[in-house]
Image (tube, rainbow over the protein chains, first blue to last red):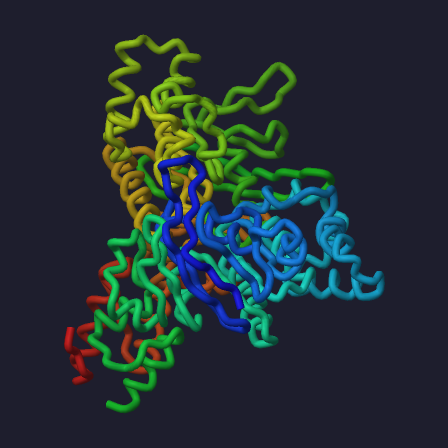
Length: 266
Length: 286
């Protein structure tokens, strides 16, 4: 279980980025984190895997604590973070090396390493680019490789920080499908996104606003109880449709199914 | 102002990444460029800006060939503005004022003209004058993006290329940015080439759409023609339909009626769907 206990963070003294954050995330959940630009989402992600340490309070993963230097290595093995900008993540000169790098650091046996690399690159349709230089790929291809490199490390918690922004619609769907498949296998998924339709299928949504937790609950409760626009966000199409047609049916990510079934009942 | 490409092909490292593209970019149009990753969208935009020195075919501006250097290489087209992905990464000055005035000063603009241009572009982007002495690196991501785009608009480009300008922005900042740019384009009667994967934005803001597939221009159509009459092109390009269009098609399929909204914009489609829904006697509390 990942625990935030009264966490404060600032980059500059007197300019708090996160304030008094306390929450728990249980293993195997699919969590979406939303909020406007500058609300503290990416800082929160970096606190989760110990890239940043809290100024006040603590972040714990089971018995491990990001404030303890000796725990950091293990925490970073367990919590994989895919950055918003893939260029922040690349350090090698080929796609293959990029995915292999993390596995070498984890001392994964050679046979298993080859299997994991193949599976991860296949999952994002980049298996034909193993020799390519990461910096010469398109923005969307870079995001696929950055995602594969983290997934191959088989973390217990996968944090994806707005890492589909440069992908075409099919590419975004591919990455989301992989995230849901990993979730079904028991991985905890923490998805930071501005695409509101993507949060409908999550177990829980955390809404950050000016560094504070403005909401923590299910997607349905979010849209019923929170004025979304006040937090620089927009309603997803499914919710706009529900409102436009005055539907009383439960909110469902698959709005087509809802419409078809209501039509056939009338 | 008309830019035309005639049978333009681009070959890089032995691979033809743009094949026989012919098109006309007319004044005052918001033209969206869509296609899967690797379809040739950015290469096309770079040809238009003159960033690709060698290509086969003709490229003209008002029916005149665009200038080339003594070796015949294409030169950068100065009257075209290019906003790259994540343009805020190109910010380097220590104040917003210096960032905005860097390029005009290099071009030798007078101080009076500079002041006038700054006030105009800040107003067009909905930015407060109080920001001018701020350090751009300490502003929010959304504001940095607006400043970076304003530093391109201050040069008054007659054609503006926007490569995924809303990537990474929250939904309200994204809508605000697109509305500002649309207002700028309409007010100045400029041409915008808008590269985007956000198909709902394409349906909402475009006059015309160009679809690229594997280096070829599959089709160049009026936005309503594409989304209301010729959606097969979207499937051919491997692209999904914007959600409002998917809704329209679903209601047509289940009702057996042909629906003709005023445009492909969500507001017009929702209005029509709501009336069909009500006429069916389905519950409507809204």
